Length: 283
Image 1 (tube, rainbow, N blue to C red):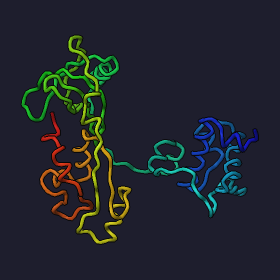
Image 2: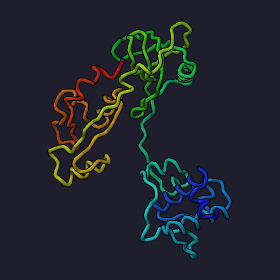
Image 3: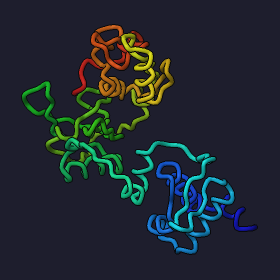
Image 4: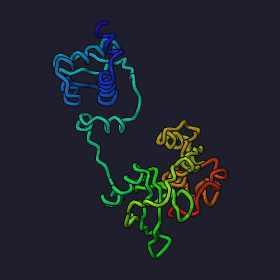
């Protein structure tokens, strides 16, 4: 098998390096041998071979001898897809070259001992006794839960669990758990019976009718939908958080899915979704 065939059919590490080359050319327009060496810890010779083979096979890059860099050609056609954000998140070298300032609110989670106990509960399949401070009650309550999943909702960590007290599956905000300890008594209840977690529903989004056509196209581009709108598939358990993040929760819960004020979006199937919304986000 020749070198080109090996590169094309090679193992996962070779495919990852090829995807990195393709991504660097897609987003930054160029790549150096040292980028591959730093990102993957390979030798300069191996990096040079990878870059040359990619160029020969795709015609996507050409070597600039003066600058010692491989550049994107005019007929460049990327092999991969994905967003710039995803690429920068995966590859530290690219992240150093393109600086993106992030406004990051504080991530809310429980302390290490509580999180360790919750994770041990999940991994060992043992229920956990928690002291939980709900916003709907002035006093904390004691609950026994069986956590099966974690959800990050705009910097808030939630624990999806079966709750023995309410006899149903609920979401618990991690920061509101004040104490946690494993319980030996109750039987473990897994996620199999969590219908809201295991069910996916479609949320149909289209541009707000008050937008100019050019604004409507822009609004759909921002969320990756065609100009006429489209559908997002979300877990039923996540529906309330998804609509809230999209700025559509109130108009779906209290109206027809169209915000009173001109927003970017409207929810087409609000009448279908409204009965699926819980009365409150906080157990």
